[in-house]
Length: 241
Image (tube, rainbow, N blue to C red; front, top):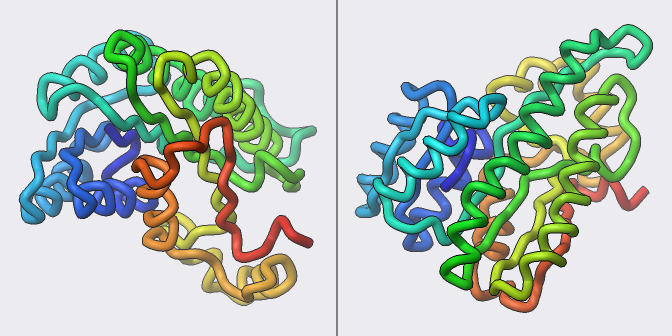
């Protein structure tokens, strides 16, 4: 099950899991985008289902987890990918925007992990991958809410890993740096964006969604069978400075 599986990182991750042999339930608010990705997955010969999900609504989370299980079978892998940014100077950030970022990025991931994790506990196995961010490890101007939510997600990853290891459940995180998507393409291809990239990323470019997919499959598979509670960084060297 991949939240936010219809576009950007979520789409690339969903397709990579399908290529590796998984049936995939894709969950988000925009069903039209989910359906597009689901069709691509079916063309690969795997089952796929688009599931409506509002991560700010606990009832929607429970319903989505149940529907995903009915559609593709027991959820062996949960990818908490959905997130929003909420950019702005901390001194001016409205409380409503802070709350919305936290409700989606952190509380939503917790509630989804809880809903799916209970079933995993009953089976004695499962994998959860939380899509965090390098911004959850280093301070980033104008991203106070986003950075705090992703930092909290990394600590949630570690805590769930400690609590659920005895149930055969592994919990890890991906921490991408800047990744090119339709939402940020205009900014990254501008002169200011290119200057920022050269100043902050040793590799001199942003990542592509497809470049995150291999790491996800690694964390979701038995190739990482002795890893839990880890945040795997993919940032072109940004955090090494």
